[in-house]
Image 1 (tube, rainbow, N blue to C red):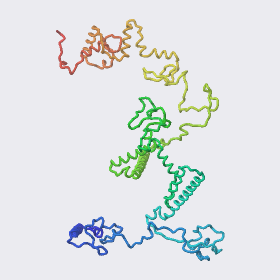
Image 2 (cartoon, rainbow, N blue to C red; image 1 turned 30 degrees about the vertical axis):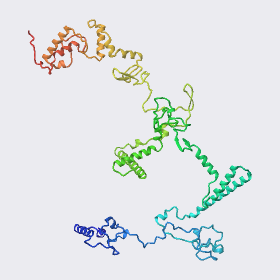
Image 3 (tube, helix red, strand yellow; image 1 turned 135 degrees about the vertical axis):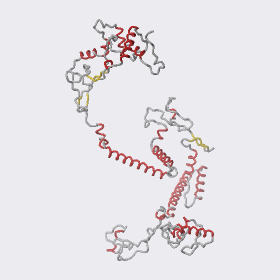
Image 4 (spheres, rainbow, N blue to C red; image 1 turned 45 degrees about the vertical axis):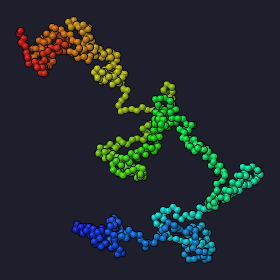
Length: 556
């Protein structure tokens, strides 16, 4: 389909015809399409090659967009083309020419563009020392030529550096020979050294400097030296790695407590800090995790986590393959997250309000730091300066009324669950203080004291043991009818008869009001007795009992 771009949008019938024509061209039964130059187009060329892009489409089938245009002249944008700097087009003129630079007299620039030092009197007025014309070259550099950092570099300039070093080396060699001649010694080692120096001078290249004897000696001694943390044998050339530098303290010797941080001898790692009481900034060694979670390590971990999460969601992000893309996407993600937080915060504030509560006061006001100097004595009295004022509320404080020595709410009564005054134990607000007498009266009128106190009536005299049992029964967790129960037969018979009468008559309004009935057991207490509870249990009907409807006749 070489002519698909030329045809444009086709109908269904035209598209079918085009497909048939392309199939015939591929089979060889139809002639091939011709381009603008009359050259046949291979029908087996894929469409993405034969179809021209929209900015090069000519409207006819063609492969000109795939051919290199030989007509274009790119001689000026080659990589080796550069400005001719410092060269002149010819000799300097003798007289000043009209339109030339008023300062130096050159025709290639004007006065405002002249790079020569401004003269007191320009060449226009003196007609002397006219500068020659420079070569002005206009280059239309390509994309690569503009960004070539070595463009215009002359490689022959670097040869001067080698020649300078070679001259210094030759002078140094000559000075060494003169020192040996001045010593006038017959030492065999000095003669050998001189001969070796002469041989090395003959073998030197003209472009490159020579290495002297001192450099060779230094290299020999450097090979024989041991590197830090390594044991290097120059004869066998075997490197043995030491565990550590001997000046450092081993990790497992910092804290000898067996319950301290664990040391792994295989990997020589100690993740936790051996001394947890010392801050990590002040400790010699704070554990391997301290270095892992300090500096830029957490940022790298967050970046790696972001790359994994993005890859799991289907995004093409790989931190090792393209770290720049991962860093850029992570920054965009954090920026969008902050923007989303700001928008959500603004929407919440716009809907519910409360923006004034988010505005905090300056740190100077919050911490209350001032430059006021206050000096105290040993007893706590202010000697110099002004004491800091205490914070006060809108309510009056430490105001004692009605002879009270404590404020309302300074005492709590657990039995009644009320607040009162600590000076008199009175739970009535704005009452008059009775002092110690009020405390004794409150204790005497408590429930425990009233139950424990005996009655004054001779008929209702209750033994001390019975009153003590009642007090224990009222204030103990044991309920009535639980535990070992001792029942009085006469009282139980009377309670049974009363329960039967109540069941016959039914619970009328008078009984439900809780008043004592005539003929009730004179127990001396309003509480339910054990006999009454037992009688109720014996007389109540159990719906789950299969024998609940069975009744015995009272007459035997």
